[in-house]
Length: 202
Image 1 (cartoon, rainbow, N blue to C red):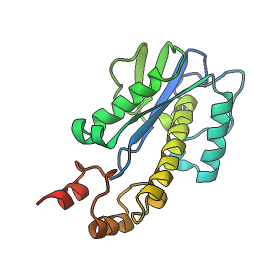
Image 2: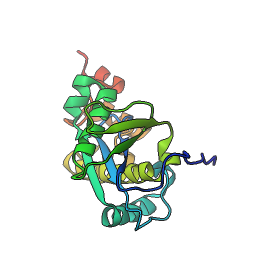
Image 3: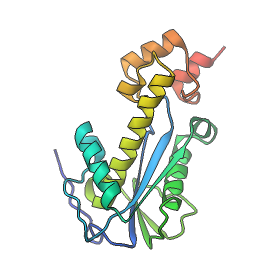
């Protein structure tokens, strides 16, 4: 596994620095959820990494630690209806902006995973490609967002049984596609995404 070096001008933590990441751009169902985190330099957290490279158990443990030790944590989301209306990219940016505004603290600088920054932030923002692998505070945000969305998909699985949402979390696995073809889309499926859209066409 290739590990990218941290950016030289990005401290591990600072009271004025927030990291932002989102989870859920690729699934066929469920919201996109973003997190913003301001880490506490006095309470470092070991083991922060891109959430996709961590086991579920490790993510859960780290998420609890981040919520307990961070100076601020904010969650934002864009619902399925918003994704279908404004497209997944704009919905992801909207969720990230909502996460920053939900922090309850005012960062001076925001580092956003990816190559685009949401508009309307109250401070300077910079996009960091592969930031969830390179910057600890973005890694923390990716973990918080991933754990929050996974928990929501488990809850949606109980509400809409038969699709296996708790297992694949809405991603287009073969089992999910088979269930979609057999049951049709649920209210939490994204009608603008190809496999779902085709099932809705007359």
